[in-house]
Length: 605
Image (cartoon, rainbow, N blue to C red; front, side, top):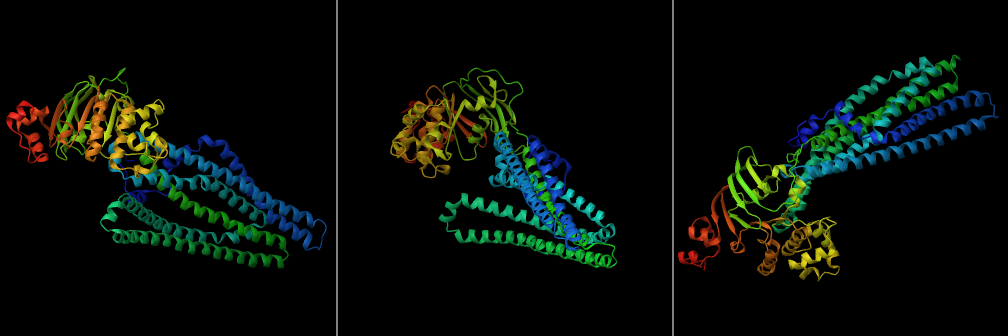
């Protein structure tokens, strides 16, 4: 299996086997914790199959020993036994289904936990290449498909085979010649089943393709609904969705058609078998070679003979779906995280925040480098700003510092230790990031500032919010810090979300602070509020600031000017203005009409 990326839905379904021994072996491992329940379910399955055999045989006894000789005494007991057999069979089937459904739910619970835990360990680049909708399908949709295998597949297949074998033995024991006559319709069953399986498999594959298209389009349009409405694209989006939805409908209708044809066909074949039984068995009765009770019992057994055959045909579809779903799931689970903890982590008691980039190169794809030979130093407590045009490589530097991606060449050191030798948790806990596009989780304001860290008290949360002036709008909310935050913080303005992000970073108390254009979307009034907060937030911390607004970085200890992945200029604000290079031109673009003289730049006025 490939581990670097997923196949497309089309590739997955085309390559999925009807049965794959290795996939099944891995799937059955999930049943290991539930061996006792499985044993109980198997016993109940066998018991239900045995009890099912009693009904026709009791019918034979009732007709031959009581009805035909007109003997009433004892018939009540046979009828009572028949009713008890039906009740017992129903009770056994109920218990079996309850246990198997519980096993299926428990296995789905375990698998979803495993997949989600694995997703959390994967590197950021993996999520760049794989759409959220596809990953959601893995965690929810594909796991649900496997539920059918665990609940009505593994155990019930065994039950169906046992029932089929038991019925065949009973039919042979009653009249082996009549049994062989009945079995003459089996080739018709196999031919119909073979054709049905081929047709349904193709329809199933097409349905999976169309469902993938529907899910992808739906996710994209729901996320981008603001843009859709802003540009009056509702009708166009609706027409496209209707096209995909109709294709999905047609694929499902083809599957429905095949099912609608197959199962009545099985009924017809069953009727042919019954007709053969009546024809051959009736002749034997006339010849006094067979009793009427045996013939009636035989007809009942023949009807039951087709139940497991129909059930096994349905299990084929379940098995096909499970193989396709399990292949997709195991491709995901077999995807190895590219960013791993070192085998022997460096022993660092406390990170101080001395950062050093040494000839760092990085490419997202092969050797198409977006970072080229970057070298700079940020001493403990220094404020280093990074500026440059879009695509210059500013954010990539932050991603490499946080080790969201692995560098291609060179070294990044923190306190003299290569970040690849640091435990990931220790590295990430030492770096606080405030991004331009702040992500808020559904929950409460307190929960979004604390982010699950129980060592951060409510008092610390309030103090952090007050320090960054977030409390000016929080205290206006009816439930204050327990106020609900909806998905992605949709009820808050951009500025309010960024203030919450500042409070989050302050409460987190990291040794290194990263501000990734954190004030670029904030209005002037809000920016004035957080400038004071930034001073306190950056005090005593090594700070890396990416900014478009040059006014926010003039007091930085060092400004790095990036251009096409390289450092072109480095120095303080006034040193760079004096050079009259890229930074000088950027400054002129932002402050048109404000002439910068060489003397002013030199003197710092």
